[in-house]
Image (cartoon, rainbow over all chains, first blue to last red; front, side, top):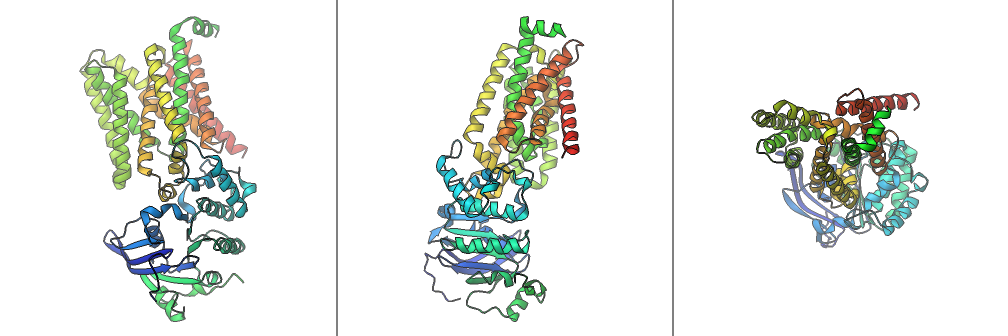
Length: 249
Length: 271
């Protein structure tokens, strides 16, 4: 990697090592994402993509190495991160409306005591419009389709008004048309914030991203390396069928 | 049937029983909703049963058993909560152990006190007909405490129940709020013990909220509906049990149980 990064890059990861119960998950990760990037993080299942994202979110602590966001330590910067998890983090029959779900993006920013305030509601109305879920506002989340739910999760992350968006396989549970719609939305969002998206599908995301990182325990390739079949072979150990279907056409 | 209403209008004990049911229902609606959506009925059960230890010790030393119950419930909530958060693999066994140890301590102390049988029975199964004015006042205070905490931290409690990882990312102290929730469960358990006794607490804590969950789609509405249902079940149970002189606590639970299964059946048929 060409080390042009100054410490005020949007995301700057240096020499991260992480293991879980003595099992090494990530080794020697160095990564820089600049403000305004739309970066893709790809790699096989179990390659450590989600773990790396959770390190950036501060959910895990690395054994060694540092992560800074815009030059500041993670702890100070939690407020500027928007996070879209993979679908299955909560039970789908939880009694909550779409709007109340999106409002949770305001936690940590709104007052500690009592209910959400007027400003929270204005911001939430705005992001629901942007993600085209305003008509669903009062619907219980258990009545949503996979694509609608994904938009709710994106709206919840946007309600934080973040400077960095971290998305973990945001289209894993939805059909291809909805997938394209969602990535078109990300492209719009990218005009005002930095995005890092995990995907299992190189072919599809390459139409959108300006930077790619391939992860299999360690960074196999990054934006200055062209992605060749050799890299893919190293990354997936020969099972490239998954990355060859370019169903988005 | 008329006798119930004439007694209700003239006799303090029946008025107290009626009011006790109303006050218990408020707590059961508020806290029960969180117990149901978090699926922590088993943990609530552990808290409820280990309370007998505190009641027994207080009773033996001639102190107020319900003060003992409150201390034991809060202690059990903190221990069980810490196990859940820090020691996940052993959760099931450990909660079961605390559940039984608390009861065993209670039985030992009560057996060495006077009036073993009557008191043990009223702790285990409640006696809504002997609720004193002082107990009513304690129940009222416990309700107020629950309402204050639920109002102040409603959004955090919902967020922690809904998606604990996202709440963490948003900088919420999730462990703190999880323990707070269990302490509120402890307080509510003590509230309900006066009405149905500690064995039957879990049913009154979960059944009204579980019925409410079938009809509404927000925790706030669930709380409201569950409280109203709780009031209906306790009043109806009290009414049914009065003339044939049945145990009121057990009757209340049966009313709630029948309502729960009827409601579930109706939801399945008319879905």
